[in-house]
Image 1 (cartoon, helix red, strand yellow):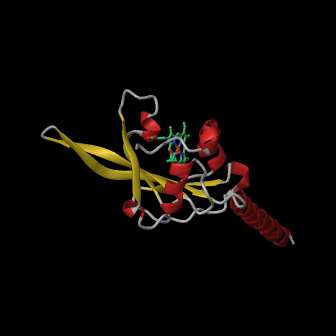
Image 2 (cartoon, rainbow, N blue to C red):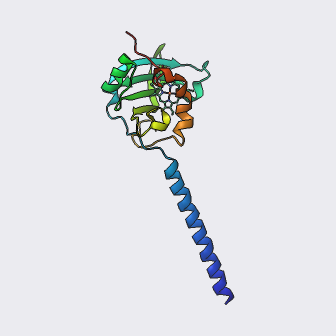
Image 3 (tube, rainbow, N blue to C red):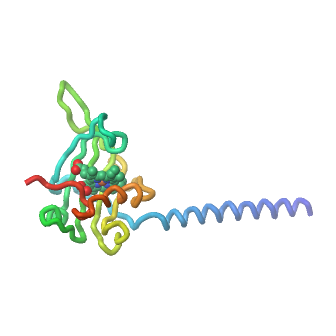
Length: 169
Ligand code: HEC
């Protein structure tokens, strides 16, 4: 009888552990934003601009290195008109730098940051979906809270459609 009650107790503990794992998994799914797809072929899109974030910058830890920004055709139209239509995608490609004989060139990819315009799906974040893919991976997403990690800063650019960069004439 004692053995049976021990077994029952073990069973109850197992059920509790499994159900808490399931609850954690399902709540993780709820908090995950609707996904922004990997922007295949973005290096063939229009180049918007490049910038180098050096160790002297406050943003170095997070955004340090060289970054290039690319726009698909719809986003390009947005840069020109100031209005970004649904379907616009912008990619910021963050790379390490490497130096050889005084020449600085692109090093390894750190991550890519993506913004995709879909005013219905992403109504909560200015109509933009935010995503980050690690290194060269097309599947490894790094964000847990895009509103906090991305939008809260981009929201300061509301007057230009939540987009910081502009294209040089
Ligand atoms: C602390 C502020 C800040 C945070 C946080 C931030 N960004 Fe940005 N983002 C910027 C700035 C500033 C630029 C413009 C960089 C330039 O002009 O070279 C930019 C540029 C971009 C661009 C190119 C379009 C544009 O707005 O110029 C994309 C895409 C982008 N960010 C995505 C993201 C994603 C995804 C996240 C979250 C992982 C994120 N950003 C977090 C400040 C931020």
